[in-house]
Length: 593
Image (tube, rainbow, N blue to C red; front, side, top):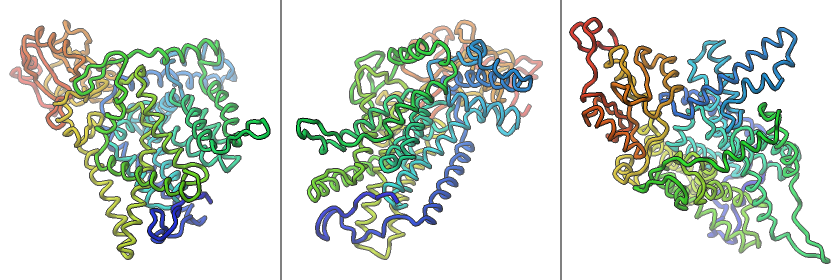
């Protein structure tokens, strides 16, 4: 059984760690099985919820990964043919690999491979889902896996269900994270792998099999997203700081704490999985890996509007990730995190006074949580690190903030139960509701434009707009203008799709969301109308539209709480008239017609 966090660390019945109100810790084997079943069922229900709320437009990045997935799917199709012909080796030649695995080489292939397999077998073969939802499905599954691991990790740490439920709810009900859980992208998958790896590392400190699991988990991370390269620094810092009291000179020799087996398995299995799991790197290996690393070391910078500041190139403000998190996380979760962090620090202080060790338990769990919160933030806080994309680049920190929230909920519950011991269940329910209801309402209100969410500290999305904060990325809001285009635009209307890509347009048509007789163009001079994405970076484009179209009046605006997200402009300030043959009197027909 895992050792829970020590909650009785200080002397006296009035100490912060008094166990008077604590129930017995630990789970029986039957209870652990129940916990696992509950977690798996909850994860399956979460996948279903994400599928039911799949109303988010296609982002620019998704369009590239749609294309990459179908390139990879071609290799699997070819592999099936070669297996039938008895020439399987032909699929593993450089010619075959380069033909199918060379698109989008700046990102690892694990998730794109899963997108490809889901598209091929769930959409094309089984016909169970449409193409976009089939390709989004693997990312949704990883989102559910993330919640499952948070649940299991929290149970291991706290040995109680209340803080585990609080941690899961806090992770699931972050509006921007919820938005990204739907996307055919890598940000939520790498967060799931990151948390999984840290959980496995924590367990590996007492288990040889889990130490081998840490090596596998890191290798999986390396073929998921670049973030995994930072994981060794996290665990080395954890090992070093946790064991610093054991570093000493004895008889002229330096003694170090025992080196965890997981560090050796990582060194062995991580590079092996990284190489074997990325077919493009099977040939010209060092040159291609070098290209991949150089691409990210010298990544281009995209525009970010940061509360009135237009950020194009470094140095970027050090406080950026901290301020963005403080303004894009529901206020109740911020308060819960502050409470949990304060209580965790207080308990560590009492532990230090009582035992001489600042760590809450022998595996320095509190330190591990703190490092996984701080390091993702500090990476982005470097003035030279690209900051585009809102909060997604430090997602791996958020589940660990949720664990701290769980700790705070547990401590507050125990303090209240000492006064009202017969109301234990009522207190637990009230605390969870206080945490979950405002967060759920905020998530629902922002959906499907959750990437525009801002909290009460800045007055929501309307206050953020007044403060000139970035509220839109990647052209996905074009989806919310499509019904208007379908209903209003006559056949052959040339529409400028602005920040949406060709791949997004083709997927809208393939999914039946957009009439095929509406003609896309990315040249303003050739267009009759434009779907304009409301971003400060495009202010000059908007002015050009007004000038060339002869009108600054929009014909349609997709908005969130009155804040424009995508605007349709047409020449002359009105949509083009339907020909009489189509509309009878030149009026546009309804969708039913």
